[in-house]
Length: 222
Image (tube, rainbow, N blue to C red; front, top):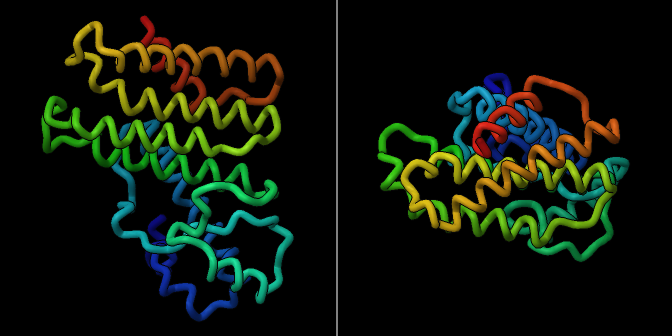
């Protein structure tokens, strides 16, 4: 991430001197680094290396990664919204659809970490932040396209992990009858069930991240 910052890849101006195709390749590279940075930071409880407020590069286009026509890419970029992706899917899925959907979810996770996991405010004062972030998660889920079974399982797993990430800090201050507690416990239960299903189908391997996710979800349920 520090190398990406030194190169200016987090700023849209960096791509002005590149051809549309070269720009897309570098956007994909930067956002891949961004996702890795977020995964490590969230899993280990560390701050991210680059704040979202300091990033203005567009998201990559949701196109087949074999597309290398500069005119076509330039046309798609001109018609894309500020995030580089349409709010609703109006075209068939591509070879990058799964990745772009994952990226959009990681950006919401990043906002959760930025707004909720902070030391300069009490957890009680942060409760008003929950509703808009929960709404963003619900919106993402409602617009998620239908992909392969393994891809849908993985996106569903990450959506439940993001929901748990958002609600877990408030468990100690919420009324026992608050619906948010049930939502957090349901998300934690789904994490365990989806991991079990994916392991049985040999569609997901063991890793530090998976063990950490299952452990935290199990602690929440307990």
